[in-house]
Length: 258
Image 1 (cartoon, rainbow, N blue to C red):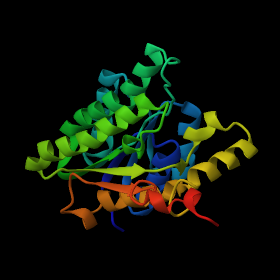
Image 2: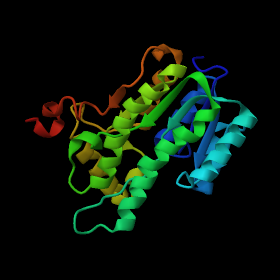
Image 3: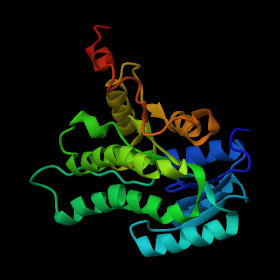
């Protein structure tokens, strides 16, 4: 098992990519701590993952509270070998239709909280640990109406490299997984019926060379590689899992004759 006796903290581990990654980490032998804001999905995730998983209700935008909870978790379970700063929210912010509150909520959750997740975990990180940030292809797509979300993911992309340099003296590796369109509950507000979701999934899938959306467990396997010793000399990079959406856009299904 690639994560035997490792302690892993996964923010937003109660749903989507975070939950899929928690399942993989548990299967690979890690002691896993997950966080989430929704008590119902957090309880369901703990039930699915097993009683040995520590599930913590945290609003990561409350930085002092999160720092306190991380310290308590490290004291209870052990110092962290892996931190997956995965928690985030979606949200369109079109020009002319966006409030300051909407914009700042996305920035606070997807950028500020990611930085402070790493800072709060830092005193409890073992030397040689692995830090993984969750990015997005929105950092480079230029999708209209998504300025705040894209800005946060562009900033996380830069921060991955900054933190990799900053933490190098302790042998702590910092890398990023970069999902394309992935089947997770983040899309639910934009497709509230089964037919609407099918249409949305087809639209997003057609934008990739491989012609489909990613599955959450495909992202989790990229995170596993970055978490384990297989990537022991890898830092400051991103692994993009998007079916070729950003690297081979001319091959996207929408451009095919048949």
